[in-house]
Length: 503
Ligand SMILES: Nc1ncnc2c1ncn2[C@@H]1O[C@H](COP(=O)(O)OP(=O)(O)OP(=O)(O)O)[C@@H](O)[C@H]1O
Ligand SMILES: [Mg+2]
Image 1 (cartoon, protein in one colour):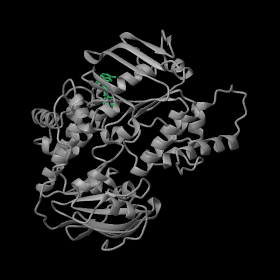
Image 2 (tube, rainbow, N blue to C red):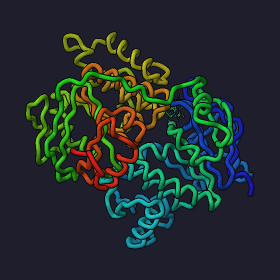
Image 3 (cartoon, rainbow, N blue to C red):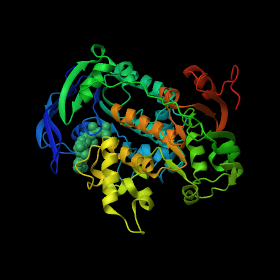
Image 4 (tube, rainbow, N blue to C red):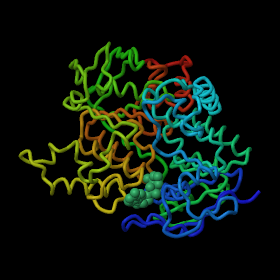
């Protein structure tokens, strides 16, 4: 079989930003070729050249030995190229089945819509990736991880020969990741080539055959996956050594800041939840996708207010019936889907970062622009946000850098309780270590932090205590000393704790 895809000397610039500089890339049938690099290295831009979303300034693209002269999204799809992006692109008001059908049906306007057939096909495609999602549910009502699974199902349905996955596992739990890898192996067996982008370097040996590293828009190296270890991979990406471990700081714990008792919200399936978080403590919220972690965070932030139980702040019962109330009480929430809810794409980096701190930034009710610029400049440096200037609109930044901006805003706000939903999802290894360091710093200053994460090493590395949810309830609470991957997984799967996991 001939090479599926070959790129030569791809160059692309955006108004002075050289996103790609003469990059070569190729993909064989039945191969998983991983693409790695720091936030802003040019990975997504390269993908968009392949899918025809961007025309390269220079360079050529061949699909199965044939030169593609003027690539565009329609042509790319006809050539069997399908992509799953970092941010699901589905229509929220349509059902899952309708969204899948939109990508697949090409019949004319006269063609009768066969609802039953649509649903069966959607359900079958979802079953192939082991996703228990109702095909008749509106997309608005399903979580972001579920939306990603719908996108993967849609791409599978389009019979793609070249499947591009841009951080497909960023918001999946271990179980869903294992499921996806099973699907990938199946597709490989059928001769499909897969381009795989991920910041979770530890999963690459499980799934990739080759790996290409980009740095600042240039090719660094293409290697056989078996020939590089994690440390070498990091060196290729960032050009220096980086420690992989999370530096957990020991912090003297203070008074209980947040306590919830028997908390429930029928609408979001949360019930009977109880836990407390002390000043300086990082409480990890673990569980599988759908266990109710994000739902619980949304209850605490007043997005879907509780209808039973109690929330106490510093021992005082409070009612949080809307987000504004939570903010006034000193509770901040950084949602998982930050690129959609966390930043204002049209606004500059500096303004985005100080949105939540205008009170601190402004003197006498006027925005102190010098102060705003100083705060933003400091955060850009500390989180290594790759942006031309602090006046650049956030929409021009790479996905991971948008994440950093959204996080920076809340880090700057210094609330009493900080709820972080997947804080390091989609950010590169260097930024991840920096975010962990910042979390430690905030805890040391007495903030109470609730961290949701699907990455068990992150949960184990950062948390003082771990609350494991299952089916919207607390399945168990583990102390740092007794927590292991196995203990968390047992609880997450809803198995009864063997011992000691009192809640
Ligand atoms: N539409 C655009 N306008 C201006 N600059 C852009 C645009 N798209 C990308 N860039 C710039 O091109 C560079 C590469 O971005 P790209 O999105 O390809 O990075 P990436 O490797 O996918 O990063 P991440 O890991 O954060 O997703 C970045 O500096 C980014 O700011
Ligand atoms: Mg990207």
